[in-house]
Image (cartoon, rainbow, N blue to C red; front, top):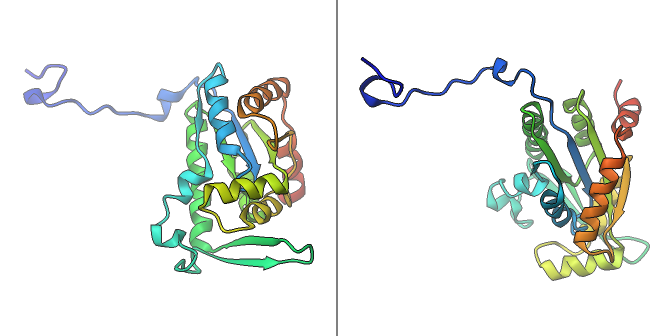
Length: 229
């Protein structure tokens, strides 16, 4: 006779169904949107340790660095992933811009779908993001329909962003500047943070305080009215 371990001592596979999630409240989502080197990841991780609830950190870098290593090399990347340009503009500053190709677009679409799966299973998510193009924003608006989303703008001064960029050593000059311009181009926010001089623990506490005070986030609703038919 088979026991609870199954025939011949083999473990019985656990089967999950949609019904198993009945009654589980959908998770909440905080999106930290801003340029590279703005400090989003550090703030997100400090927020995780501070918050009373469990928050999963699912940032853009998790998916960016999942690309084939060759496609992270600006000298070798293929255009179906992305193209890039670096231009010295009239202000005398270098501006670096990524132009996503179809494969990167699909990867980022899948990223939002993955986050939605966490939310639908009752997990809160904090996601740091660089919204390089309007279509990514539109994808997020559609995929997170019905979810409670706090849209938070993260800023750093141009001088401090350039200093951090040089210090980390893995970004082309002007990446922070160009990515910040792209990220904030179409965005609206429930509230914003400036990381230029404020220590990360203080920023995390401010994020948690503002999140708790903003019980009915409205930025995503305003963005839907602008961009969705």
